[in-house]
Length: 429
Picture (cartoon, rainbow, N blue to C red):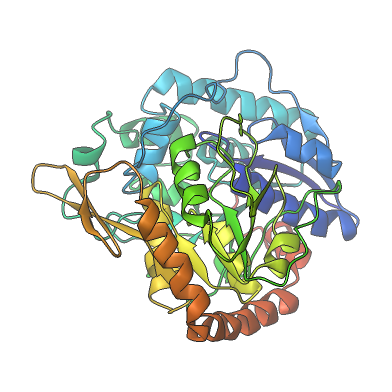
């Protein structure tokens, strides 16, 4: 049976990984013969390039703000803080307007199943319409652990980001829709089927499902449909740099990476993302491209300098390449700690700690405690040198590559989405 699938990717602050993950699933569903459309809450340029329609939510729907300078590090301790701070969902009228917009799209498109990626309003709108929900997630989206995005923190999430809580809002609107109380923000992101892009050995779920079933499906990410510049041909060690799409990364951070690569015996290929505005000093051994996708540069690289985004880290492991991680927010640091440092597949250049007064302190891998906004040039250089010089990092990454590929090849993504429709597990609850 052909399904009609409506996607709602998160787009508040960056969002390329969320939209990309949805596109990976959408491609699998389209290949299976399903009809696919997207709400206009993610990165629409990516969706249109992939050839899928984008439905207009209308002028009343709250939209992501225009890009503006971000602080060097965002301490989101859990998904509730992301909802409250990034999307201002502590304001009940804002949540109601977004749910109404999502409900209009659902009513107009008439899907048989709704897919969300970090989109709680769409989950509520779909459940109110009696539709099954498939959720794309990292394990930390749905973990019952306190400070799920920042488990090393010793303070409450609001001590770090003191915006009002969104939880009372979620509870009120859920009750208004006849869906019952909401005890935790993470519960909104459980689908009737929840698909985690990874492996349990990398990202354990740490608890039973809140609803439905959870499946680990291997890495899900998207490559641009159009041609991208080919990485340089070289006999020297090859370093690929991708530190975000521009939503959360400052020019100074990227310049530090370029300076670290200057005059080194490496060939460096840089993805500057969507928001690159120029103004950088580019060394002779560096080639700067735009949004490169992942597979081509990762196949080329010997080492990868990344920001710790889930899609980048998992794709890098899938290709068996070691990572050098410079995190700019808490979940990126968590990925660096859990997927890279703990596994021995690379190095994490900066870690954070919390004080009893709700402040952050930072320490860099080689130079120690730091009050600088970004990792020092010398630390970046030493990190790249370390992973290039020690083949053990690549060997361990290659072992994880084998496991990730086996999981991805054994997974029937379309079948898992279809199972949410046929079983009707938890619909409307």
